[in-house]
Amino acid sequence: MMSATFELQKAIFATLKASAPLAEMLGEVRLYDHAPANVVFPYFTFGRTTGFDWSTSTEDGSEHLFTVHAWSKEKGKKQTLLMLEHVKAALHDTELALDGFRLVNLRREFEEVRYIDDLAIYHGILRFRAVTEPTD
Image 1 (tube, rainbow, N blue to C red):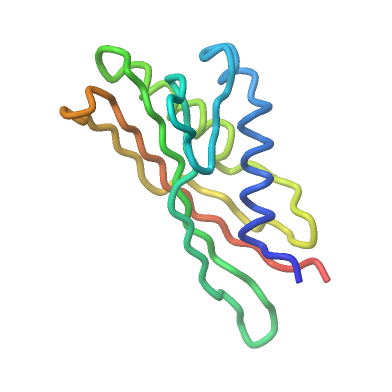
Image 2: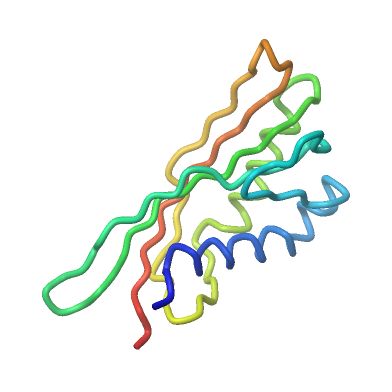
């Protein structure tokens, strides 16, 4: 059985990797499930993913909460905020093709940017909510 959560993550990775505005801004879209050692800044990581059964008595469905994290060593929040804005533009209310599932909706729920003193980096977080249902 296919996993809606995994299919959603695959589609998100493909969408962000193919984003022309992100590539133009960063030169290369570096997006990782787990960032490697000595990673080149700026980059993104795919963070916490949570899935919930959202089925009704007549239809199957799943709700997904996931985060995309932006990491920057630039001075000030500008780069991190722009990174988040491009991710939001690429994903919020978009239609993604999922194998075996239909994306009902995909919405940004939350965003935050903070400076981490001991690492001297800016960390941006975007949380999204998606609803999927099987196509079979």
